[in-house]
Each structure stands twice: as structure tokens, then as C-alpha cells.
Image 1 (spheres, rainbow, N blue to C red):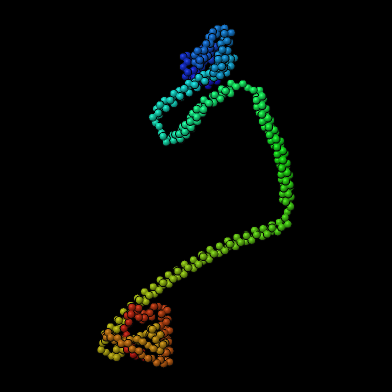
Image 2: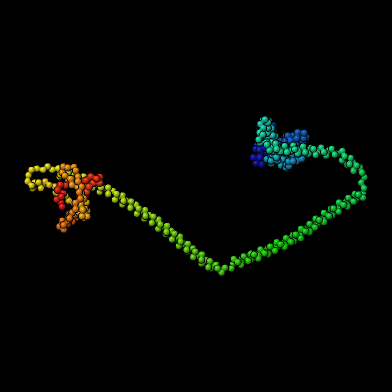
Length: 420
């Protein structure tokens, strides 16, 4: 006996409505009167009109009572109980009585579930969903058509029943003739014998077919075995060109390795070449920028020097003339201007193009002067040009004599004719 069985038994008896409270301690020791009372209640619950002897005073009465209960349960409820355990009236008897109580408890539960379902159906009677029952409507329509057709055929057959009844009664009332009966039986026997012969022929054909199939299977097995042996021989024999094939395959692997290595080197060199070109382009752009900056600076310096030289020359030309000696007049004269690059280029070409401007006059006259150079003057001018080139290297002073780009011509110095 287990605690779970005893607990389930007490709970089921309470649910079934047993009037007496059953404790778990009632079956620690044999308690036959309680077992007999429970069995009588269960039998009455299963079959109220059942009459079972309730006298359990003597040993024979107890045995008769247990046998009657076991027989009733076996015949009516199809429940097999152990009479020996029931007679012990202890925890083992609880296991046997639990079989009966479980059947009654399950029946009560199903009844309650049926009542609940009926209540739900009553509640959902007016909740009809047509979309969920379209298939049921189709089936019902098909069944209705079948019922109609079957009813029509049945009506036609019943209409023929009058004539068929007469023919049936006449056939039944007619006495049987032995000759006709023997003839019909012989025909039926003959048909049966023919069917048996056909069946035997089919069986013989099956046997022959089986032997032919066995022969074909054996032939295929032999062919499979030959093919296997041939495959083994082909696998064991080494082809004649296999050595050459392996050698060529090794060469191919080597060539592929060299190809991969060269391809990697080529990619690396291309990347290096691109990097070199990029650096050269950057250097070239940087050099251009520096040259542009230097040119801009040199232009600015040339402009500043031109402005400063123009200012100096204007200041020299504006000195007032005093009455005095010729030496003072000569000292006040402006010094001989140095030939500029334009002058040098003009002298080299043998032709000088320029203009002369008075100290106070604003009018300018362009003139062309042909110059015949002597040997001595050529030597002096060459020395002067060398000095000018040295001065241009040492500083941008010589650039001051160059006319500005804006078209402003420098004022002509006095006594420019004395230079020739």
C-alpha cells in the first residue's frame, strides 16, 4: 500500500458522496466491517437493485460476501478484483477497491463534462458562424442529392415489388425437381473445378516464373562478381602513362608556384611604381609652388626697387641751379647713367631706341640713333656690362632701371647726347 493510493481512494470516495469520512489511519490494521460497508455502498452505487447478503459475522459469511461482490464486478462492470486481498481488509484491499472507485469517478467526471458541454451548446446556440460551416453545407447538399436519387430508385424498385412478389411466391411454391437440381449442382461443380484448374495453372506458372527469376538473379550475381573481379584487377594494375602523368603533374605544381610568386612580385612592383610616380608628382607640384612663390617675391622686389630708383632720380633732377663756377655747374650735372640691360641689348644689336625728356618739359620725342662703336668704347662698354651683371647677381639694383610693366617710361636724363 502506498500513501498516494490511500489518498486518492479517500478523495474519490468523498467526491462520489460517501457519507462517512474515511481516514488514512483506518487501514493501518485489518478492518473488515469498514471494507464490507464500502463494498456494499459501491455495489449499490453501481446497481441500486442489486441484492447482496450483508451478514459478515462468521467466516463463511465473509467468504460468501467477498465472492458475491467479486462475481458482480466481473460480470457487470468487467472489473477483476483479487478476493484474497479484499478479505485481508487492509491497505492491499484499498488497491482493489480503488479499481471500482476509479471507474465510478471517471463516469461522474464525464457526466459533468457532458453537462458542461451541453450548457455551452445552449449558450452558443444562437452564435452561428456560417463561414466556418461552408464545407459542412457542401457535404449536406451532396448527401441530400444522394438521398433524393436513392429514394427515387427505391420507389421504382418498390413499384416492381408487385410483379416480383408473384414470381417469388410462384418459385417458392413450385416443387423442386431432382433432375434440375442435380443438373444445376453439376454445373456449379464444373465451374468450381474449372476455377480450381485455372488456379493450379496459375500456381504452376508462378513456380515456373519463380524458377526463371531465380535463374536470372543467379546470372546477375555471377555477372556482378565478374565485374567486381575485373574492377579489382583494373585497380591493382598501374597504367603505363601514370608515371608520366605524375611527373607532368609535379611540373605543373612547380610552374604554378613560380607563376604565383611572379604574379605577387609584379603586383608589388606595380604598387611601388605607382607610389614612386605619386611622390614624383608631389615633388613636382611642390617645386612649382615654390617657384611660383619665388617669382611673386622677385616681382614684388623689382617693383619696390623701381619705385625707389624713380624716387631717387626725381630728387636728383629737382636740385636748383646756383650762379657760380663751371666746376659747380659740372658738379650739379647729373652723372652719366649706367646702361641697363635694355641698353646693353640695344648696343649689342648696333641700334639704340629710346627717348629724351627735358628737366621741365612734358613733351617726349622718340628718336632712333645709329651708333658707330669704336674699339675702345666697345671695351669700356663690355667692362660696364660685366659690372652690371655682377651688380645684378649681388642685388636687384640693376633691375631698377628696367621700365615697369604698366607702360610708365622713366624720365630721360639730361645730356644724353654726350654719351655718344
